[in-house]
Length: 114
Length: 113
Image 1 (cartoon, rainbow over the protein chains, first blue to last red):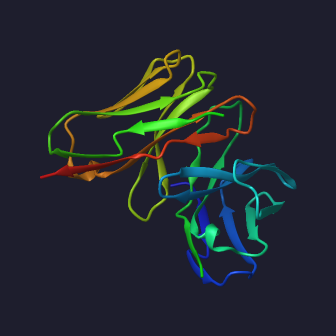
Image 2 (image 1 turned 30 degrees about the vertical axis):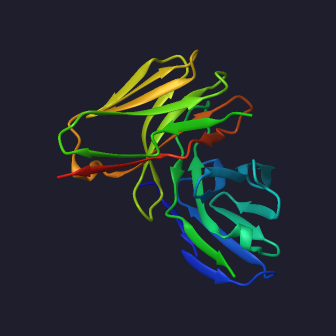
Image 3 (image 1 turned 90 degrees about the vertical axis):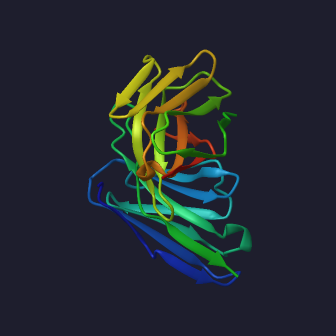
């Protein structure tokens, strides 16, 4: 299994509070991704990173920010959580060498915003 | 905007049956198509990746085909087993770089004894 961990694995928070989710990899892969998974929508890309301090928006980036200060860590921040951000969040990585590489996924973080 | 559809949303079959899962996509300008498996409460595991220049890929009892021009892919599972019970997702990588994937909503498969 690819060395990807996510923390926390479960979190309950209140509307309006900031939340940061962490993704850590031991594979030294260049690309890292944050997805959210919701019933009826499948997985949707929030943000991704193609290197240290290099990030870009995905399909559903509003209300989220990311940072990548080290190759191994990719942080997802909800500046002011809303109930619509209740979801399961997955981190993924890929080597990004030449395109067409598969992505490896972490175990997910279940976030409930009350 | 690329849209990926998977039909059926759920499927229940008896053990030993051969089955086909379907995936369709609206924009044929893809680099590759991937099939993933997701067990309840878990992350995704990659099963097969088909490059746009390929027609099919095989791994064990799994065979995935790709018809890029018609925007379709199928995942064939031979001699299904209860351990195959999971949700199967297809995803396409389009142009624009970044290995970004667009996912379908999945087919939930149950293989019964």
